[in-house]
Length: 399
Ligand code: NIG
Ligand code: FE
Image (tube, rainbow, N blue to C red; front, side):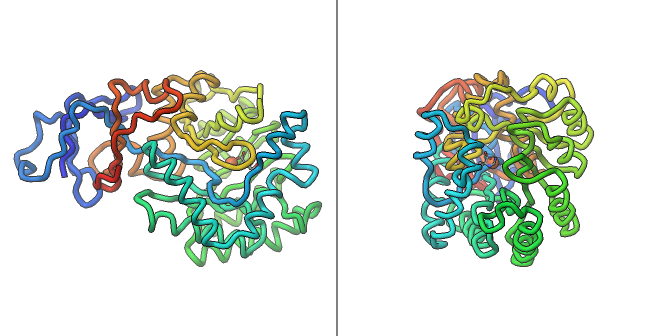
């Protein structure tokens, strides 16, 4: 299959969009076999079916590298409570917040969770997403954590999308172990992780390091187990306070540290040294009306790659649009449109440990987003009303 007559945003190289004007992409066996100016297309490809993209813009398929899209229920009532003055942390401490979603998710059957998750996936796909990360963490008991991960594994059998799973048993202690976090980790979280690994349900291990969740020491014990199991790690770090989460993640060689509003300069330096991606989640910043900005200038000056994701979840970020997350990253965090698009393509792939996604180059997955747009900045600039023309997943046009 050839996709020709398009302006290609390749992100080949470390700076700039890497635009190839009037380009062509040859897809074979799900991968990019050739890419370059259409005028230089080798004759050996002349007989392949050719899609004329009529001058449209083509980017790598988008990658949403941080979501909690498998969950039951919703938390609109907490939205109302926050509007009446309660804070996210107060609601969590009084047994609401994550625990509300845990109760609903435990109740739901695997089929019910799948149906609602697929609806959310379809919305993301309609904006050009071809890879999505999905976390567990609303079970907090062994059966429900496994149930969530099994649902995640079914998504990419049913939809043309790549799914990466993260085990988030260390999201918060379960209601049964409310003031016994160590015991929760020992008796529930770590055994659930062991079983999930045996069942091949886990691609990475995540945690939440915060006063309302786990201490750095507790997160370290989860990371040590993950590393013994040969799994990469990620962390919800320094979202509401500086507990040294960025540095902790970096010390363990994490793929990414996410949120980071309160990350210190020492944390940023440690992330630079370990090659840890900083995942920006402007949907949570916006929803919680946070005022502390993540240290964007420090990430830039230390060459820490920045990714952008929805954090799609029912509490702090009911955001179903990766394009709107890109817009918010520009407007709220002052990322450039180029940074925000790198943030949802090559840097998001890096945050998931994928070395063959998020760029358009030979050998990479042939995952493309085709836009009715002239310039890549249009993707971050608009709010709503996607300009997606079509999507290509593993070389197949999927719309
Ligand atoms: O990424 N920070 C922790 N977890 C989620 C929120 C989960 C929830 O409130 O349900 C987040 O913001
Ligand atoms: Fe999250």
